[in-house]
Image (cartoon, rainbow, N blue to C red; front, top):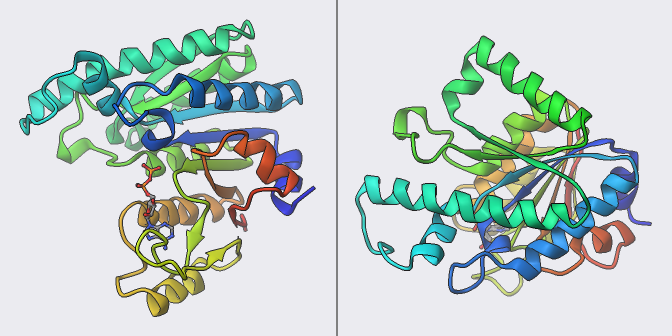
Length: 265
Ligand code: ADP
């Protein structure tokens, strides 16, 4: 077993964030095969006594896939309408896939305000605990149709970190389209080196800065490192792995696929 496998084995409460690349195909429809594979692996973890909360992206992309128009519309009302449509597609897919194992799912759509307000915070916590204790898998997403800039969490990496902290998770697994954090963007640099273990996030940022040109990386990797900062200070480990690869959770546990682990302090 790998180091990641050891951490998964020791963790009971696991939040899994699934990125939009992982769950949509090249036409923007829900990638049922990939999602089926992930749900099957999550069910296997539940069989081992683990509790799972999912944070799922992809509503916007799935909305375009479902209605097959408006993809060039720039107005906010159309973008939010697409998320409203796509969210249903996504939840239908999760519901059907989990039901193969007789497991119910519950949807929670949240905004930044919900985390900032103590009463709402408590209600989110209580709902999460109740769902999980009763064997239901909560599926969280940002409430994109009501979120305007001021109340937006902005990205699901941050949302998954907020959820992991609120629930008191042991482990947050972020599934993206990349094997982990590299010293520079691997999509532009064929010599980029995967960093498998991170004990100190400040040194990681410096390593990325000195290798790449930009300010500690670009795009999605920044929010993933920020999520790692948010959870590791509460002792929660974070694993970043490639959700586009079949059987990824099993393989990182066996050590046949690589990932990046950020150690909780
Ligand atoms: P997701 O939709 O799964 O959240 P993102 O596209 O937002 O994923 O973020 C992942 C992307 O971040 C990778 O595909 C990669 O191109 C980019 N990236 C930039 N710098 C790095 C880096 N140093 N290490 C890993 N990925 C990086």
